[in-house]
Length: 256
Image (cartoon, rainbow, N blue to C red; front, side):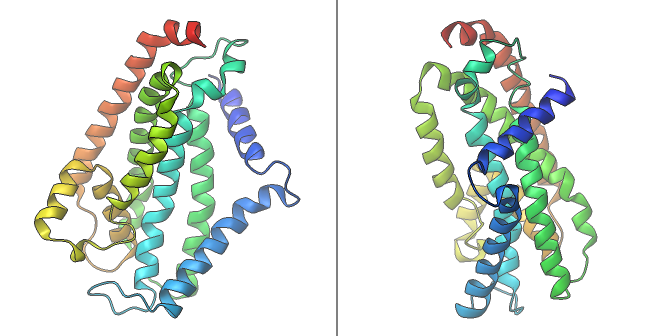
């Protein structure tokens, strides 16, 4: 898939998302801005939620937003990629697009949306005087690992979804359960250490979300050894997804 075609698909993905609305693409800025205000005002001021061991008024809000923004990109990428072959079957029947490369436009679209939300989040941090942390320089690499993992899983599920349409509903439930098994809303301190260690071993998103939170909050930085292990896992899943799609490509096209 050429860069021009990739950008065209990604642009159309964003246009379709806000099609029919009067404000159009402006919602890409308004929605994360409203969410940011809700998290800060409701959790930080109204509910006075506090992160264990952190006295900062905005500590919990930063903790929540730092993990929620990339999680949203991950969940949307996985959900959309897992249905992309069925959703784009009309295009695939007319144009000989590479199936393994097709979901890249979803990764690009979700990454752009994430960048907009991240920009608003950083503006908020500057507004409250939060100091810059050198660990933030690792954020693009952590996000890359996350999106590689989402794309690899999405490729595998996209093939399965062609032959079993229940996969789309399964992914929706999976993402919902996965969210609550990941320390985004809750802090690791509220669960037994043994349970959290087990979650960290079984749930690849635990090292990623805790890395994001460590980048934005004062204290120790991310666990780079665990991130390295997740990077290897993400690369393996992506390679597996690519090979699986290539081997099943003829069957997928015939079935569609």
